Image (cartoon, rainbow, N blue to C red):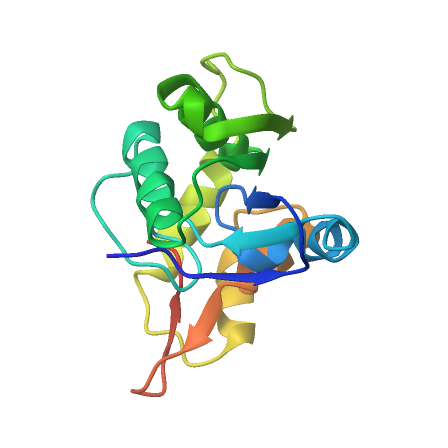
Length: 174
């Protein structure tokens, strides 16, 4: 199983890795700017965007998936840019496969174990949406607004809601 991705620009390879609940388009503005100097690859991590879903969601599995994707793209070494959880994945790659990373840029995360659960309300809201059949985006938003106070967070999450072939809505992340 391979990661979903796209590329733009020319030059040395640079891989952008999004954060939790995101997808390859989250860093689109950065990709556009960097494509003037690099061949920029944007990827969907497993359980995100249009990549495959799996039970394995640890940083080792995520970094293995990125390395497998790099191998299929014939990318021996890359610059990695990771945001939030993507930064943790990028750090895992740099630690486990240092010979594959020419530069590492990590945004909005540190190489420590966080002891505070900052996203419990998000997880609770997403679990709530799984208890009903979602017939439209407004319904999902209404369910999530019961738990999530910040409308920007809800809007960010709704970017990953899509209409299935059966006419209902589901999440692109697992």
